[in-house]
Length: 162
Length: 291
Image 1 (cartoon, rainbow over the protein chains, first blue to last red):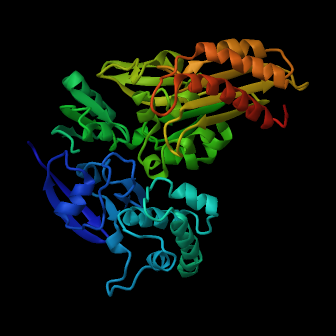
Image 2 (cartoon, one colour):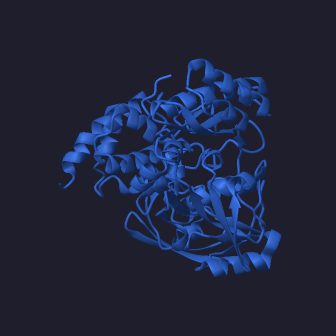
Image 3 (spheres, rainbow over the protein chains, first blue to last red):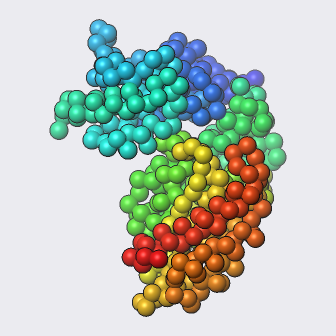
């Protein structure tokens, strides 16, 4: 089977791989790039665990082929914390407000929330609920997630250059 | 849960894409946003030998004012439609239906053309297009043709499009001034396909009398259903709760809904009347007519 070269940047770092066209982007990120923070749950676009940012927008990496991402800028959960391990304010808020328990859905929720707060720095609770409705969480009952995103919003808005 | 092998083609022009389809015929499948096709490939319900990816064709991704309505490129993402002020202004019904499609990270990839050609009878866009009497431009190597939405949807997941054709443009007529519209649906969970979806557009004269209406339903049969008997009953009448209820009741005879784990056929049929009435009521409310 013919292979194709895929070059992407993930969290600002260049990665390159020689892959079959059928390789899903989620598997490229986890297996070729060895970035296992992006989780794979349902593999048909329902659970949201594999959600990453592709050219700034949240996408299901299980519903995109790696070859389609050639040349794209990707962002995954590994890019959130600072290199010294200091958590991103959104991650800090998730810890503070019990926005996670087992952590399986968390990478997808965090990346969706990053986009959400970038598009709408002052979301209502309703808008937060709508925004993360594409991520399934079986532990928290969502309340902690919603509180965490609401708490992170003013922190991120204040940090943003006006 | 991994797709079978395929040959990947990423044409840089529409002409190249049509040539690839001409060459591969039934072995090829067109990849638009991939939000329905890729799950089917992951489950191996679909195993195309060749995948023709339209994502490198920016000329198919646009939203333009045209006449009193809109023309949209088939590769326009649902998220772009959701955020578009031109869509909100020129086709409020299309704008209202869009946020109901899947979830945000689905709409960033999912396209209007992909949704229409996939033709799930419970999907939002086919219902909107039937209600608004949209037309589609379909291209093949030899040329293009235009197909009316009413003739496009043939049965479950089947359209008038041939294996060597690509849906390129979606023409959405505007509604007359003095028309209000609404899109409503019921689903078990937010973001699911609708159990029943209803689109209504109502034109009234200055005295508040209904001049004409368009009603279409999704999820109640193998294709979207245009509720013409209800439209006929409403024409020329002053809207009253009794009239809307009577007109909405006629849609039940037009439905042939599926019976499955999500809802019984009987429930869906009942809801087709309820949601027709509510959509009509909501469409009139946009004109400040409270029924």
